[in-house]
Image (cartoon, rainbow, N blue to C red; front, top):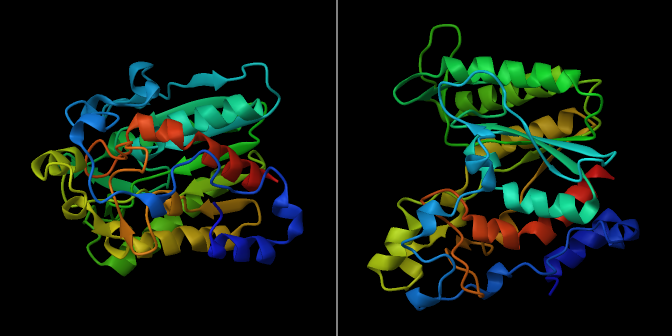
Length: 309
């Protein structure tokens, strides 16, 4: 079902987008139908197994650990394809593997994957495990250099946790002011994008997914499948300032697009943890289950095709 606001968006964008490349909801559970209660035995995955419902990139070791500085890339999709999509970022990027892989299989793209624990795609210095995360800066620099060496990069998808703690590079101090942090977030994405100028035909920045106050699987188990205590206001679940920074990058470059998949994850004012088909969306307080990412493949295909036009 296409909602009224989606129809309005179609009109605004023009009838040319009414082709197969237009973002649609076909095959994806509609957030409007999220239930108030589920039997825990019907959840996919079960709450007890959610933490282990990880993207394949973890097992393939394409999502590297804290101390790694040398990029390891894996290839997915159609290895002989002429269209190459490159994905970089932290665990927020990694959680989307199944959706992007499903999109690639449908579209006939080749996917090159490089992600790293707690290391944003934006060229910012972050604090992780209580210290300055120097290995992240080195890894990211090496990743961007590696991309510049590829024969082609039709699309580079970037995704990062908007809750990353940013550090001023001049003195190593934590940036505590939200406005200053947003400004540095924008500058960091601009630095990453600038490194890809003349190499990437298109860059897409995926907005972060909702962040909850506590583990969703534990919350659902505690409340015997009642979802309201585990839901969160949409305004609190997303960082508006970091998204505004990403949108500012979109506005600055004709070949960069920032995109928000939040309407598949949340209702207009609230984010709920379970779909109408009883898929558990989150494996912790922030990350999607791989099961839900699989269900998101049609939406990801539609959105990326639309953005690559």
